[in-house]
Image 1 (tube, rainbow, N blue to C red):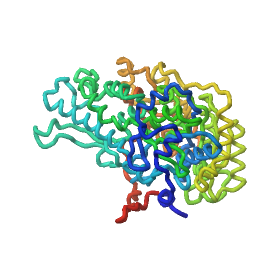
Image 2: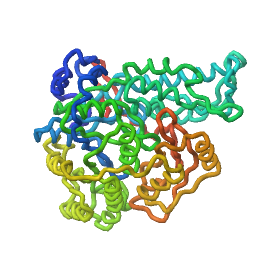
Image 3: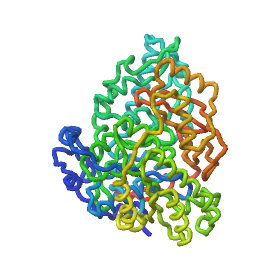
Image 4: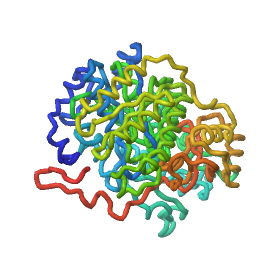
Length: 555
């Protein structure tokens, strides 16, 4: 069997101008990055803005397992399938981050015969959007330290600088460092550190901004530090919002590529859903909804994180209303949630499957709380038996979820038609869309609703410092915002070891951070970190390039 990168390299891509023409875009609407990538000019919006929106389908999943679920693969494959069924379709995905690509994942552009291409470019530097985030983030960090060095007119307390530096790689050694050593000329010594670039608030702002003016306004509101007398210091105080925004003059434009079957795809923006809101850009979604009958998009990790944040944060800010949600699962992953070791997942184990089904059923219930229909896509594996597949199907139907087998990895769009047909029926169903909570509720009440309704928790515990921060943020007027929960992706709880559908637990919030520019508060639970490390055998170890420029080892 060919690897993903070998399949991608054999693809018959169309010039991106031809793909764009399918969406009504001409050459003057595109900024080309070679033959197969382009940014779409922001001027196009004036021509599109009064058109009605197409249908919006979100692809989410159960909580991830070592067995793999295939969320991006199914987003691409189902999009191709809808196009095969005669729909004008656009796919919208997040940009991969170099950290996981070279660390755990080895690539994030789909898999098998359901990929976005050019896969190598998308998984590497692409069009430079994440580098723009990195540069802007670190410019702001440099300005803060420079301000203190030159007299500290704003009375910034160096012990309370909240803005950290970033890089787009996994590097645990840089999580906590000391800056400014070497004497007076090198600045004021202080503790600092690095996050991964996609965790930067600037990435969230890039993904949530509706245009450059909105981006500038959001950047102005970013809180970077506090003064000695506990007043917040913002970018507006430092007078560099314009400089930071101009670094995004190209990055804010949506990136247009294609699938292996030449379906148009926007790949733009890329925060993680375990530490941020986990969705591609509002700009890409807005453009796509005006250009297509159907937009199929993806949110990161399981529905407890990605789907909840897509609805309660992105849709709330952008005024979007989803029409249906796809929940991707596999028989193997469900058995993993039932306690089966990765080496034994190919064996039939109905007891473990039944136990693990609790995870999927909880996600189906959760989608219903937003008033949306759920369609379960069972990502097929050769080891799946008819008995196992029938059991999953019956269990889903008990909760009113449509369900179909997805074979997009092996067959591309043709393997996704069964799911696509169920989706076309689902998006025509009457719905009563609603958010999970009122953003004006007190902070602790909003956190409690998410923990109780989405995770199934019995309650929420707060560290003393988190409770103190909540009180301070409430006093400062930052309480009437959505909540972005930073939580492990592997469990419905905040404990990665609690698989399936855990009960009898409480969520512990150990820290609360304000992302005033993005427009939400981040509640950090458990041991979640904003700078991942590399595994013992990083994916980078199997990657290589030959003298002709041909890449191997991207999965």
